[in-house]
Amino acid sequence: MSRIAWVTGAGTGIGEATALGLAQDGYTIILTGRRREPLEEVAARIRADGGQAHVQPADLGKAGDVQRVVDFIQKEFGRLDLLVNNAGLNIVERDWKRISPEGIETLISGNLVSAFLVARAVLPMMRAQGGGQLIHTASMAGRFVSPMSGPGYTATKHAVVAMSHSLNMEECGNGIRSTAVCPGEVNTPILDKRPNKLTAEQRAEMVQPEDCASLIRYIAAQPPHVCINEVLITPTRNRGYLAAQARPL
Image (cartoon, rainbow, N blue to C red):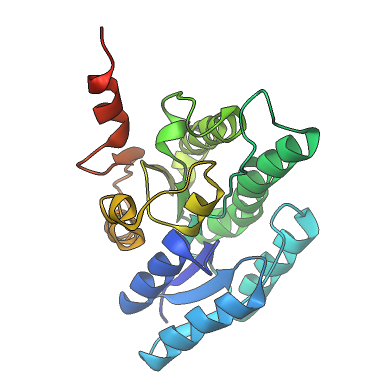
């Protein structure tokens, strides 16, 4: 029986590239996101390449939706080897001068509540089977504070990193491993929410979704006795570093 992987935020960006890559590695993929159409497109590409994919749309900020997908996995496969906890978002009006109560709720629900609900829901299955792996897409903003990502995104991604480490503290005795992947700038649709639009040249210099997918596949390929707790991946031409060099001391 092939290994089973659940990828959230699987319709675009890092989730899409990761789902395609893990399918090449022999995983059966469960694809989740809010919109069915992009998930079906990813599933069709996986199947066309000989892989297996199942589309399960859900609003991961709702516990009932999360449990419905987990129940599907339990019923169809009886196990889950890998969770790629990737769903996330940002907003345009993200600084303290403009952020709204609705924006705060959107960020917390989309980045933190969803990550917690998904992780919590898969743990009973992983404990029962004697192990499992969780890989969470956090951010450089989950390790360092800067104005660019906005306070809401930064706070929620810090919490995702802390969540991942707490999983290792509590679940390592159950053979469960958790990794926080912290990318710098990645050329994904989330960049469309930037207040200042980026050029094609700027986006080409960033980490690409396939780069993150390669890293996630490497983490997933580690033997059960190895846990990669946290990893940073950034563009070589790091615009944050370059901007810091340009400022007078």
